Image (tube, rainbow, N blue to C red):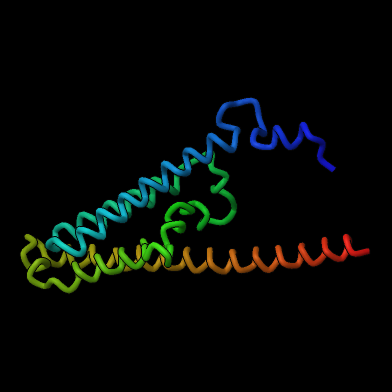
Length: 172
């Protein structure tokens, strides 16, 4: 059983300033805000502008996806690769109607379907190869997201089992 001191100190687990829940909460909120800004800007690009801007948005999504995957100190770089993208997953929100993977797919489809845009490149075959590479990137993001959904389902199942076990102990 925890004593009152344990509850008071629960937010800090070490003697460094970044070993504190409040520190990580602020960082997390900042990253989430950046992700939302990128999503909103890229979504605006998809809805209002030419294919060049869709292409630019794909680059920004990929860049920030990879930056987030390298972020340390969040406890997200565990054995599950999909946890490296935690803040992107929080953008897959039905209430806000934001889904970064669906947006990436829309932007990619916009680029792939604009044959004139592809042909206008000095070497269209290189652009076509790059678009095919983006398809692989999309497949990777989708796979990671599906793995995360399955993991979350398992966690919820385990939590329910834990609650039942605790209830059994309390009732006895």
